[in-house]
Length: 371
Ligand code: SAM
Ligand code: SF4
Ligand code: SF4
Figure 1 (spheres, rainbow, N blue to C red):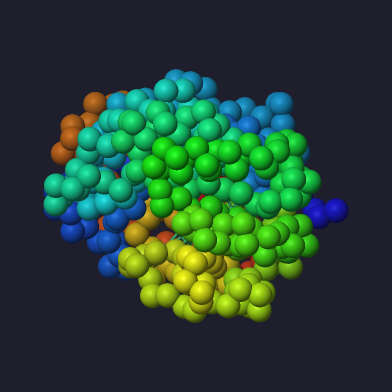
Figure 2 (tube, helix red, strand yellow):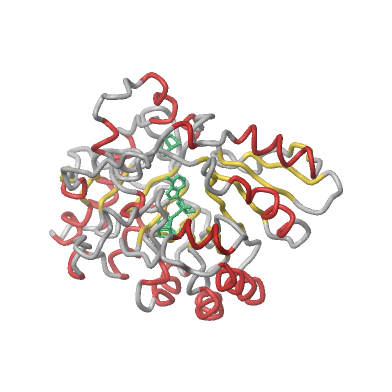
């Protein structure tokens, strides 16, 4: 039994008021952070609730019936989210990913999708609009999401074996329903679909090959994610991480692979093609290979806190500004100044942090800011 770290402080309360800088920062689409990284990708968490209890994300021991989720009034409304997203687009964001918690639990999500689909990049193009889901409600919602303007979905699935999958989601949810959700998404045209599998050594690493065989040749891109030390509650241990290099080695032995070039700067996945031409797989090596150097992602929490890194210990309170009556120009200046001050690069620094530095116990949960 691994030791669990139960947070003593509620990290959601740790926030810094976002302020309007004296010098306006006009949105030119060319914003750079303190390390010269542009702002291209915004991940928006639309709920902190989930119907799964994946132990690496929302362990049952912590997220139990007494856990206090955000009250409804704390959540950004769809109009507030769209206003923030529009400002980010003016600053150079080209891609928006809806996440959570489980985003499909947010009521009438299609209405938000419709509003976001109407936004444009600084070049006048529609944003790349995607959603990450555990797939449990996808069969029911795929058509409506597509009709509202969603382009693609990424579905998280940690195994094909029903017993392994039920244990991973820890609410006894059957794998067949997620597979039906993926099929519905494909039929609705929400592709190219990606499937993300978090690999925990000794728990679901026997699912790597069955998953690869299942999705090979379907047009669906399977990606293996290293189990990360996000948040403060999952009891993360390095010996449960299976390095991506070993995932590739195991695959390559059975299903020969050839490396592919990255498609976009800041892309998190390393891509490989099946040598027989039947598609591709990817690995996301957040632990063993830092990709902070070109990290262009910002995260907006369900209640409007802006996080500059997945491992941040503090958010910037945009809701306070919005509800305090800030003008569009003031909101743009505040966001611009926050990004200009960004120097986060946790994954690069991870190896040099003392293990008992206490940093880990203060980090915000992934279910709160989204993946
Ligand atoms: N509920 C949705 C889902 O599971 O797809 C969206 C939110 S979830 C927080 C986003 C992604 O984060 C999922 O693909 C999940 O597997 C991944 N994730 C959560 N905790 C993780 C951890 N400790 N290490 C690596 N990936 C993690
Ligand atoms: Fe829920 Fe997604 Fe976290 Fe699993 S990874 S507990 S499905 S939010
Ligand atoms: Fe980006 Fe932070 Fe992850 Fe580095 S650790 S890649 S800065 S989110």
